[in-house]
Image (cartoon, rainbow, N blue to C red; front, side):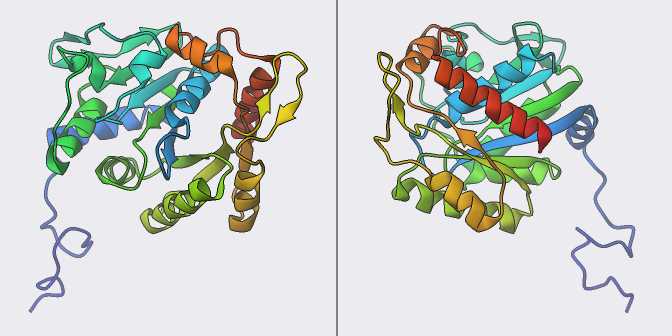
Length: 280
């Protein structure tokens, strides 16, 4: 009996029976080799502003001159198109490749929303279809070489984030939370997911951390404050920063320009987060 008769051949280095990589595998590998940094934006629960944070970071990095790709794999609830004012604009193709949206000079965007004939259509997809679509976004999109690929995942630890981290083994996670304990409990599950999937955590962001009064600029901690920072210290993970509740965020997102008209406090918070991310 040979030393690999009982192996599955999936990870065996002793035999020549490993399956040949598919054309899609090779296309994904080729694209990812041209991306310097891959960041997966995650949250333990919905409603914490994860997609807004992903869009803000992507836009701000692009304004600083970095070449950025923003990939929305929140397939059942894609928000990126709406935040960036791309709803209703179809994705174009050239040959057998999809063309990402060109948002501003340095930011390319891909979202399933651009493939839907009806903006309100519900995608009733099981795991295998979702896995295939995410891999197609990586393999069959005409991305440029990128400094950053930012991937907006749905909340939780299901098919989409698992597919992303298995397909992009050198990605790092950014986990978004709000200060209250119920959100932090779910963040702990996300951190456990990252540990099991062997994906490094680039840091935690605490969103909706205090409401800054637009008149007197007094901070009111509606949802408490500091929980994300405390959790980051507990887990020995970088804390990237806090973002306050800002009514202008809603207006800016609805207008398709996420960094437009934000308060001074919010702009400073986002600048600090990106600075910490670049120094991480």
